[in-house]
Image (spheres, rainbow, N blue to C red):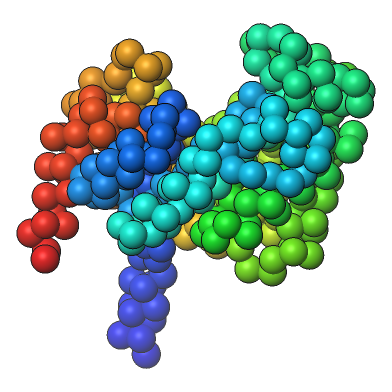
Length: 324
């Protein structure tokens, strides 16, 4: 009896490491000027240990595939390079999972509303206003269904999953915004997607708590519990390992089973297109997340391919080579 009790207690102390083997990165559109470059970038990412990519799909009024929803709204002006089909073909050839990352979420435009989609959203009275040069659409408007329809368009490409990030939010600056607004928007998007596909994974990469609630009105533990998202990737972005350690401990209070088994940690390596976090800090962040049994997602793919290509190969890729 005592031995059985001890076994149960010990077993309960272990966390099922569902995501710890996921080594992911966001593949930004800037990395993919053409198909051949995209293929080379993905090949290098695979060599350096990446086994999942979140490919930029929706940005500044354009989709990087032929979305019929967007095409019907603003014709060719809304269709960018075919990065998503390229990523699916060459990512799957490298045995990677490929998620369509709808980066802009409720952002209609950056800097101004002069783009074709910016004008379309403004003419439809979807625009609430601007935060940090980003023009937000109202989740209570038809923009929510429009976003869901674009996500559904991507499913037919053979994508492995869909992702929204911290731009799927309703900022506290706007009087109409509340937690309930985002709860209902997430529910609506989920229901529309599930009518089209009953199994595809829907991921959310939100701001960390408590910021996600206090400014973005996104209660991501509750959105996961409600079933609207099947994966959460909190963005614990910082240049400091010490601060990362603090943020992880702060957010782990809210990451309980079954969410515990469906969480990856977003780690910033590129502060911008020119500047990176010191590798010593990055490596410590990755190792801490892994010790806590989380997989990680790296912002962004440029650091995997260029800035720290050798370092990532030694951390992840070399181990894969030695296992073969």
